[in-house]
Amino acid sequence: MRFTPALAGLAALTLLAACDSSRDGMAGNPPSTATQRAYDRATGSPRTSADGTGNNPRGVAAERAVDRAAGTDLSGAYPSQRDGTRENPPGTAIQRGYDRATGSDTSGAFPTQRNLPGTAAERAYDRATGSDTSGAYPQNR
Image 1 (cartoon, helix red, strand yellow):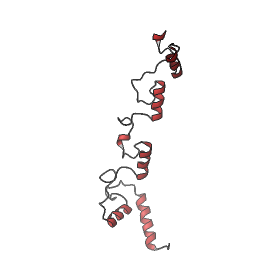
Image 2 (cartoon, helix red, strand yellow; image 1 turned 180 degrees about the vertical axis):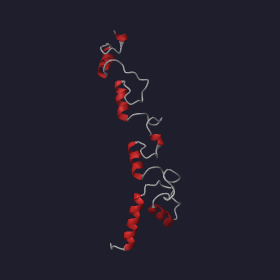
Image 3 (cartoon, one colour; image 1 turned 120 degrees about the vertical axis):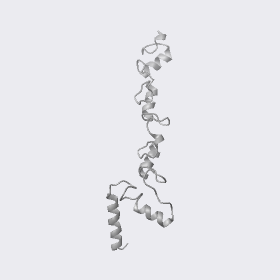
């Protein structure tokens, strides 16, 4: 590839655009990137709108990919995946699994779940033997 002044100018403009901190779609910063706008013009595609509006979801593609893979909402494009929604209760799946196994509420997903006396192992022993070594089953005394 041969170096040309036009190529150097394009590289400089791209660098300046990347350093601009004004919000996408605001005065002085039209929606999307210069590359995207050029693509839209060249292909006759509808104009790409500002972040989080119309045909341009919130966040960057990398953030949205992480959100899809991890079930999070870092980008803001997947509000149904936020912690505490009906689809995604508070805490991680590991924390909720721990809570179910131990009867605790470290995740915040089980506020009505009380922490019974004894350990999970003691309670399992009590259930299996009909005893009350944990203190959780006074009816077995």
